[in-house]
Image 1: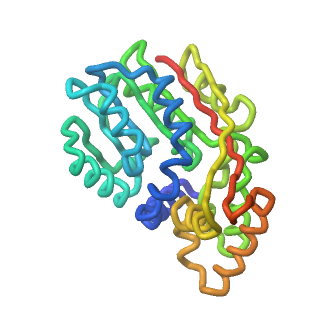
Image 2 (image 1 turned 45 degrees about the vertical axis):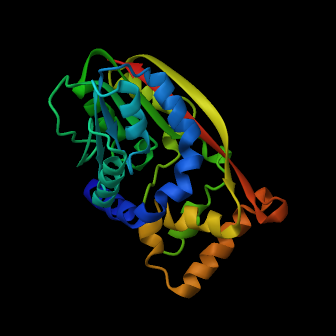
Length: 272
């Protein structure tokens, strides 16, 4: 897929998902985000770049860690995500945070201008993650660090059939290598190839909790990466896709109609 087209798919897809993203994914992503922030070892007064910041879930936690003497910049390819993040920060009165729309592979900041780069569950969507890692390293000051989180192995993520279910109905190519970075030691190898040293990796098993079929369907189809493709479905196609997805997660259905769907994250840290 042409990288420019893939970036447009990502941009407009996340614009579609923004209204449902936090309700669907805040709790589900928290374990990965917490471990990533812990591994980043944020300190008061540091300057932090949060790439693929979404609505600012990680950005605001980083701002709390570095305190008012520090600064956090969140960037995201989706304009609606940036708009929502600004609104949330304004409501919370967080003055040492700012947000900009931007691409991970072309970061618009000078060399050696940050102490920490974070990227929580955004790398899987990039046309060129290796190029992005090079940019992360470029904007880091010497001896500073990057901390990243991605989804793990496909076989450990019980919701993974959402992608073939959507792609069988509309050619989306939303994230053709989604699980590649979480396989084996791929992420560590990429970080090392990009010039990071002392790379450490943690693999976390998790469970996605949904109280009903509707919650599981909204998270999968409306609040996440396939939202743009899903918006093109007619009613009949949506019903068929819903049925296929619910069948794919049927083994994780519990008493009362709730779901406990297994998942996995890979979290890594490297130094410049």
